Image 1: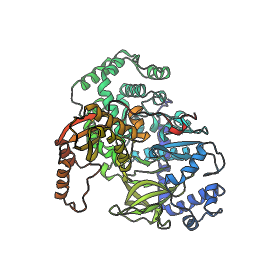
Image 2: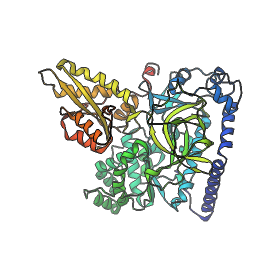
Image 3: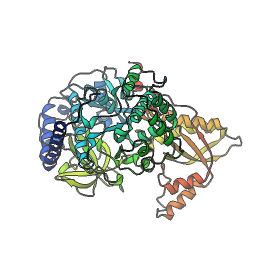
Image 4: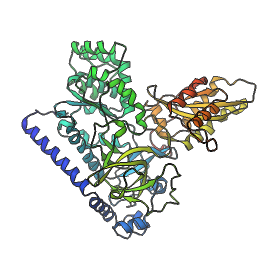
Length: 603
């Protein structure tokens, strides 16, 4: 990784660059509506002759009103036939005038498989532009970050090719493998402890081990630590708990453990690793104490903050992060998805519960579907397509579902995120992330909804039929007290037969549920090791009556009450756990292979 001397010239250039970026944010937020008009016009002008826009009769028109009157608001399933055509090798201009260079695989799924988000070559530069805003913002709150390094744990994931030969991979894997990351010039804000070779190593064990080793070797230089998701950073700490003795030995001797067999990784680490018995003694002393509270500040004493996503489902990890970091600020810097990158947090040292993102008007064209979460949401078929609001027209305190038109071929696409307006930066609204629509369970990047869970349950309970038993009630819980976290299902049984049900049958039920869940979940179990084995807990008869009594005591209507299919409220989880009679885990990992199942015989 390129290094450079730090002198006054570089510091002057950095300060000037920061000013330019902050001025850019001021400008686009002060003129949010004008910028949005221009963005929509540019997208529609460039793609005037693509099949999708001609199909809906746009005929080259670029004004908002015509666009909103003619183009429907869509979900992934609406555009999936066009995406499948491109994936299968159709190179005609279906969605964009520029060729689709890769598909970004979403953590959201359709039909159990990852959604494929089209992208074009220039979109990578647009995403990198948003990255470039983060550190100038942060430097307003935490000075001198350019004088040290960031220990960011970054990993690539599996990729595949569509039948038409287009690469399909997660958005971060796309970025890490691109020249924007691999060949980046020296920049004090992207000066990381992890050499590129350790990030790009496909073996997750070797990547994690070598990145932690390099981070420990440079512990005094580290000013900030992080990963993308809170769950991933906590997994790294658990990895350190298990392997610190090996890491200590490497630092003491100046050699790399033979388990690290990737030659390029070993060579990159050896450029950093030098024998250091004093550092090894300190790590041994701190890690052998038994108590890991504050371990981040004990091993990396100059750390100013932890940079991880702790909004949405990741909020469940905040107490654990506070424990490991001794209460360091937990910083959420940006809001992004596979569809598009959206916005930044202009107040990064705020509490996690107060995180708001300012949407950058140049990234895409935004619309907002009003949401009332106490009522049923409008379905795509009943939706009035003109009722969506512009970026400049949303109201403080209101909730909306995000709808985007991107430079890469999505038009009036429902992202599925529910956002609440919390304030404004000039004329651009700021939003807090409320939830992902319809998600019941999530541990890492997985998203399981109630329908999927119910279908998995139907498949599993067939194992109980020979014993004349069935599940009379059930609920679920994402248990993050274990690392990695795992799904828990609470079952109340109706037992009519006389033959006891052996443990192996319940274990088969666990595995059947896992086999029935989407590919993102199964990849988390098999490849990423980010999700632990699913657990079924059998509860006493009458447990769900107790659960109903408790809900009613809190004000629920007895006439409208129905058992929740997912519980998050701690007292309810405690009630369920107090009545568990037995528990069972999935005996092995479910089946998973990279790519969509319909591609397996095509590649």
